[in-house]
Amino acid sequence: MNILALDTSTDYCSVALWRDGVVHERGALAGQSHSEILLDMVDAVLAEGGIRLAVLDGIAYGKGPGSFTGLRIACAVAQGLAYAVGIPLVGIGTLHAMAAACGAPRVICCLDARMQEVYHAAYVRENGGYVELSAPRVCAPAAVPELAGDAWAGCGNGFAVYGNVLRQRYGAALAVVDDAVHPHARDMAQLAVPVLAAGRGLAAEEAAPLYIRDKVALKTAER
Image (cartoon, rainbow, N blue to C red; front, side, top):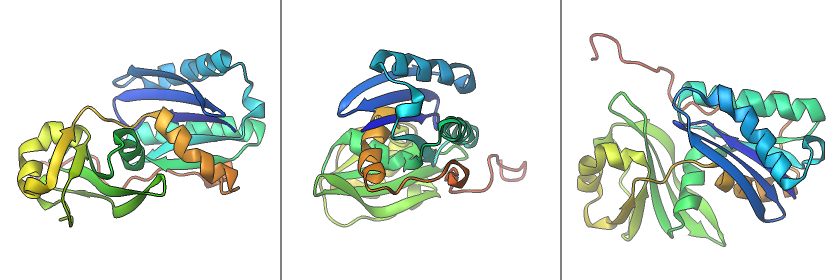
């Protein structure tokens, strides 16, 4: 299959082209400039892979959770590209992609959600993929869900920002932490393969971000 994937859910911007298991990718710490560099990255991976947009089997995008603006950018660009050539879309959860990047059997994914909160989810590896054990949510670091068992791997910048609180919460059940793991288009492309192969892609107009929460800043009294 030929799949284009893009993610702008965090400060890191990434694009990947999956061609039957061969991946061409671009990535950069973009800050607030995702919209300025994203299409150039798309052009670069398509050129490197020697393929035209019209012959792709589908486009994957990081649907969230993450930066509200970033999620809208990825979704809108994916919709525009897919609509132009009539190909399906698939939204891939950013925390799911982080679990795949981590690669451990049991993964706790935490992204800094600002406002003294984290985006949290937990996954276990089964039959070569990852099954959601704790669904994506936003909560205070001290209130992340308790998880049964041990030998959990933690990943994501939530551990960089709130590591002490999260380690205290999970104690000895947390075996290792990699706070450098972040959502990336290459993992989203791979996760999109079985979805598109099964014909479960979406029409462009059906795609939407997954925000999790409904506000982006604290009120004065809350601060």
